[in-house]
Length: 407
Image 1 (cartoon, rainbow, N blue to C red):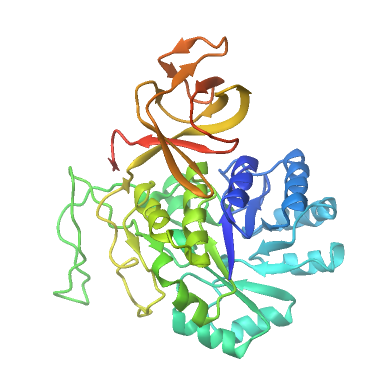
Image 2 (image 1 turned 135 degrees about the vertical axis):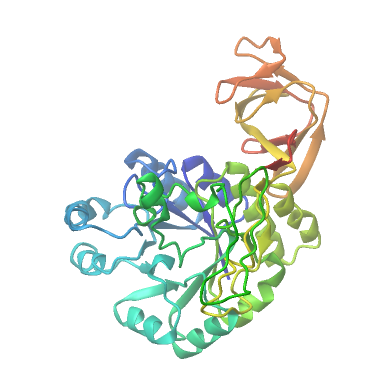
């Protein structure tokens, strides 16, 4: 099975490839369901093409919003500029793009986005007849559904999300953000209003279902009844393979570079049957995450109101903070770093790499641009670290979190 990782920018793309992804998916500056990710400029695409060619991994472009009349006209004019882009496939949900791709790039590979909510073999067969090589199934598909679809349309590749955030709506088709924040989830601009904390007054019982109570718990006068748990299927890869999945997709283009690295690495080790896979699996519980669930894979009722195994009872939980990456060596034992967190001297650091779980370091120095010792480095500002450990470019720096649960 293909391991498909998120890449919200060029640095995350390099990381996804380095830490074991067979393929990565990215968005352009427009028409992506992760509008607020950094996304890729034309200059970034040139660099992405060089990287992809050198490594031999695949690259997919997400153009998966629902297009308005004006936007579909703009897409018609824009698509010819992508003829030389380094994409192996385009991920779309709006069928209005199908004839446009046929006109401008007739040989392009199309993948149906999860936003299209394909959940049955009849729909899958229809999309295949339209030229789609792959369908990214709706998150509501069970393992049994997947197997039946694969048996019915064996030439169609099937992909499913196996890790990351879930949505309280049907495959992300939600108007809550547009209603409360004026930002459309269907245009890639979701404000994640389902994660907000709400005040609840009174009791919650539906009028036609007396005695059936929705579980509501308040913490400091607010509740998170709309916020679903995160998906995690790392312990069920054999079941996913037996069901017929061709690609396992990790959610998270807007999450940190460390998230991309550690989640990709954990699934890579598990897929490869590495002897130490359990060590890497633990990282999934140490990075920032909500409570985990197996989602709908093992069955659900169509009228289920549990919001994916009951809503999460707390916010994000994390054991480690992402502090930065090693960018290049400036001298013997001296490395320029890209600080991405509260980088203060005296903390025990851990350095992580694709095939090195971590190296611990409490004997290092932080240096400013003049190579003078300092007590801290500021976020996203140039700085250096002096260490005796055998680190390399692209390695990631983390430290134990000072606050491990974030509401």
